[in-house]
Image (cartoon, rainbow, N blue to C red; front, side, top):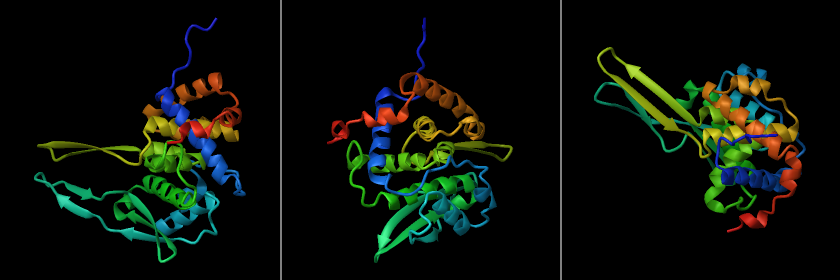
Amino acid sequence: MVFFSPKLPIATREYEWLLACFAWLQTVLDDREITPALVLPDHPDIVAATTAQELFDTVRDLMGMAEWPCRLEKVAVDVETDELGFETTRMNACGTFSIESGEAVIRYSDAMLRNPEGLTATLAHELCHYLLANAGDPPGGPELMEHSTDCAAAYLGFGVFLANNARTYMAWSDGLASMHQTATNGYLSEAALTTATVLFAELRGHSLVDAERQLKPYLKKDMRKALAYVHRNDPDVQAALDQVDLLDWSY
């Protein structure tokens, strides 16, 4: 007799949306000749990249977009000094994607160069914008396009990067005063991205042992909870996706 059922680290409705988004992504991406790998921070090609351009080329290759023409540009962010002498940066986004005169352009904040893993997450997200440029609206409507772009990056194997960098915490001290700062990046929560990574791994048949090892410590429990829930409720993820009626998510 089972007394306790596994509980999700996210709301049930959010989990249902992730399934719907995966089902939608299959309809718009499955004609691509690529079987995504689970890409982790210790991937040798990621580790070997020593410049932003090299990292961009690596991420693009791993996403099966090596032949997609795109220009990468670095953008400087404004640096301000507060009353305690600490430097802070101001930028509306870690990266952007646009089409200019028929050319795809991805721009990234030069502040991201200090965080290669975060830059990898940003590049994966922006490349997914490129990938979905003509895909139409995602489940739930156009206001969820950024969320679905995060989901697409997880669907293509980069969920650990996005989960690890969805929230950052920094602390400074000069011996007399201290400051703490928390920032959020991306659109899906850490727990949602971790759950999406579980769905991706179960769908593609990847082990999550190394993925859990490379997650932030406090996200490991979320991954175990999501995995237990999927094993109990959706042991065949593809069958669960086949049952999704995308009309239920129209707006």
